[in-house]
Length: 258
Image 1 (cartoon, rainbow, N blue to C red):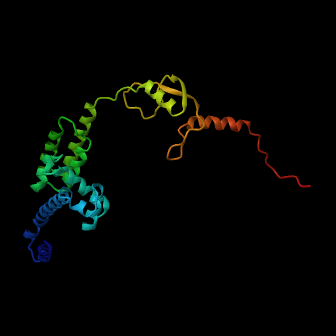
Image 2: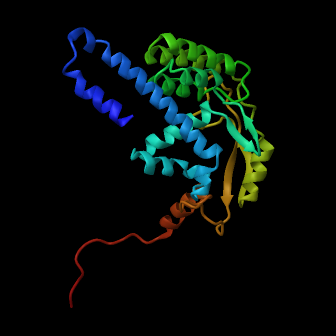
Image 3: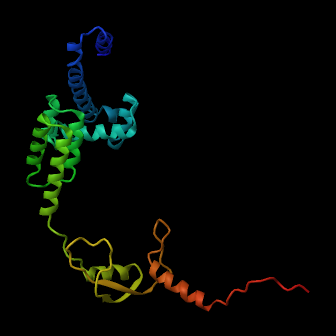
């Protein structure tokens, strides 16, 4: 492959204008073919146990790809993700699970789409839940459009799919007030009564406000979170104000000398 590409680059200057014009298109096809082969090879690293034999866990496959290709870790993680979505996955023994994006996998193997198309398809399908009834239909629509359109067209269709998913997704169930109160008490917070409205600033649109427990007293011996913030921050602030009100006023000025 290296000698072929080297010979092609050396011959570009000798080509006529009519021969140079289709060369980028032909090079793009070859690039897409090499990309599809690389994705298949990365899938084989996991399915055949090659990465595991070298001591790499499934979450470390990108590290192996980085050493082999000298690309950035972010690019290698993306390649591993594409390989897992467009290839069969080994489930144990000689059993394999079908690709999560079968239509995209076929289009990629047939060199009908480019890496740019694949990126937009994966982004668009990321908002579709795994058990969504029309998930395979969305994949077919995106892959079919990618065969004849541009990545920007796939991106616009992805926005339409995302809007449909948002419209058809049922709203979340109401919060369990009793369960919330029990959980607060379990964490050492004494509660009595509920506030009339939910004061959370990021409430979902068109969602009725939910009652919320009113914190009256906190346990002083409660352990803090891992980030150092106390679970009883509201009570701690109140206690701080009360303590500060009992402290004598600080005097400013020069100290008298004998």
